[in-house]
Length: 272
Image (tube, rainbow, N blue to C red; front, side, top):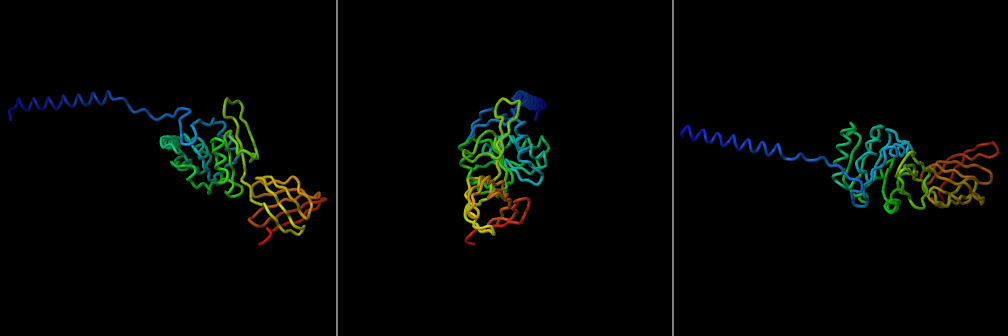
């Protein structure tokens, strides 16, 4: 091959390399995904929870490193990441894959990828029964659909919602942050034990009626007042006596206090 032809081919290769290099240099860089407020999701639109309210929600739930938190509709991951920074193992359930990817990056940037995990999933097809704490920022209609599943969770499970209620299941506590523009209220529930029915005790037959965490009925024919469940802990007054107990399935064990004296008290579900 003549030297002229070799030179021509070399110049052609250089020219093509320069063109390719310029094209690469001029190509716009891919912009990182940044969600806009109001981004449409499967069941709700995305609106970020103010960080101060995230902190308040976790404070109300009194999360500890022994907890397992699940955030239903985890968005950009801020609640899961904040919990992870408190030493909590936390999992975010999010249907939008772009938000899941963003959350994973945010967790890595926050140095908590070992504790903050995220899963692309449908809330209504996800088993969250192992959680000890549930957090959420969903619509009331979605809360109501999830309510039967939540009420079947282990008594004592803590649930915190940003702003939206569980309809007639009244929260155990409500707290607002100030100053705050929007989305300023945290609502807190503790899943109550199931005590509806008839029980037998040394004080006589116990009939309990239950409306979520509120309890009424009779014991030995005496009306029960101020009846309340806080997870698996039950308390009520009857005939001037104060009853406190721990519900363990079909058995209640505790104390009864009257006239300055305290004695042990127990009840067993009838028919067993």
